[in-house]
Length: 120
Image (cartoon, rainbow, N blue to C red; front, side, top):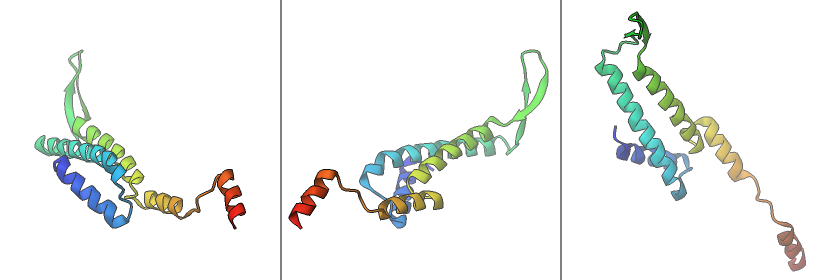
């Protein structure tokens, strides 16, 4: 899926979760680009026959089986995406963290406290 489509899906998910803020757009764009690259890695894996181990010939001429680089890349990109999902409140833990922050009363500065006492 292209990043533009991912942006729409991520924004919609944030809106449904109640976590969307316009200042998250840069974070959403970055996540969308990560997810696009993750999709490309998954497609490369499928194009290679969905083989988890592939032959690799080293400098010495020995051939060994190694983990398919597309799987490694997919896993790394997925881990990166997960961090962004959390930050946007799109995982249970991320949503809980955002909700807890928004539910805490905001602290007033000492000056605001003094002015409030004078006024009331």
